[in-house]
Structures are given as structure tokens and as C-alpha cells.
Length: 159
Length: 94
Image 1 (spheres, one colour):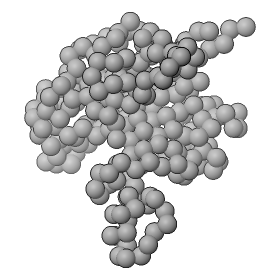
Image 2: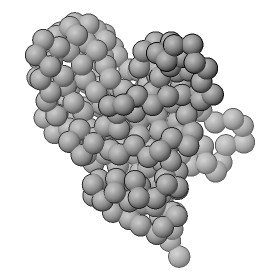
Image 3: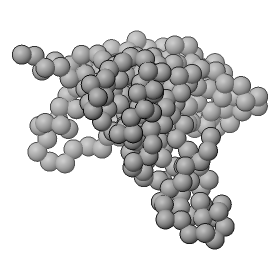
Image 4: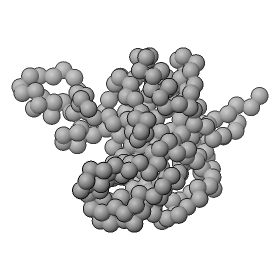
């Protein structure tokens, strides 16, 4: 008998323009990808570690690079590291009891300009670390300037 | 064991499964066992708040966000005057 272990779900993202308050949904329940490194990490966390594991994958990163998510990815190409959109420990992390669903969510506030944010990923560390999930947005954010916000919500369904 | 791509929301208490966010919200709202546990920041002062047994917060089908907004005990006390609160968190009406 083959058992299956699935961990995927959705990535959503919303840009809010500071000057106008206008919102733009740039990803709505986009299926994310579970990477090979993420699978290995989860098995270690759950089954094979003989010492304390790492912390959870609650860090959110994003990129302006055009990427094609693949299971072999271990880093987020062109990960943003400046101007308010650098990798962050998500402020909100919540698991719904008796379900397979956990939400990891963070609102980034730009402190400088960006041309267009195109994709996001989850990590288990504030730098480097394992990247278990990656997803493209359905459309780019368009130009962001200081004080514009980007809210990224990862809904991860593990079963 | 095989890893596969998934995505469906699954309830282990009621043998319920759906890929519809709207149906998932309805199920969790109707079943109080589906509480929330986790952490967020106080909407007033930003201090980290840990919560358990929070009533289910629906996922916004238009944004994918849960919009969990809580105040810490101290900020809640300030908002409510000198009344002592027994709760460690206070949900903010949104």
C-alpha cells in the first residue's frame, strides 16, 4: 500500500498603493510548489531527526526575477534584500485545529522603489536555510514606491 | 511514501474535503472544533501575541488573507480604561 504525503496549497498577494489606497490582487490562491529540499526537510523534521529540528518555514521572501518554479529549486533567484521587501519572519502564523491547513502571512512596506515583484517563497531561516515552497504570482505587482504595501499570504495544506 | 502536489483543504474531525475556499470557510465556521492557534502582532503596539482557541477566521476569498487582528492585554486595558481584563488577547472588530 502506498501512502501519500502532500503539502501544497496556495499563495496569495495583494498590493496596496499608499497614495490612493487602491488594492491590486496579484496572486489569488496560486498553487505553490513543494520543492525536493522541502520534502527532505519535512521528513527530517517529522521522522529522522535525532536532535532538535529547525524552526518552521515561516519566513517569506519575494523576488523581481522571472522564475519558473521547479522542485529542484533551493534558493529564490533574485531574492529581494533591500527597501523593506527583504525576507521577513511572517507576523501572522496560524493553524486551524483538526485540519490540514496553516496560514503564514506578512505585510511588507516598501521603503524604496521596485519595478515589479513577481514571485515568493517560504524559508525556515532568516537567511539561507531550506526553501520548501515557491510560487509565482499570477501577475506582477507593477511599480512600488515607498510606503506601498505588499501583503503575502501562504495557505499551506499538509496531509 | 510519495510526495504529491495537493491543495485541498481537509478536515480530520468531520471527514470533509474541498478545494473551495468558500466551502472550507463555511465548514469551519459551522464547526467550533476548528479554532485557530498561532501568533500575530498587536495591531496597536506590535508586540507579539500568542493565541489558542481563537474562533475560526475565514480566509478572504478575494485576497487569500485571514486578517487576524488582535490587541494585546495592555493595549486592550488602555482602550477600556482601567478595567482589568482576564483575557490575554482581545479581538479587534474589523
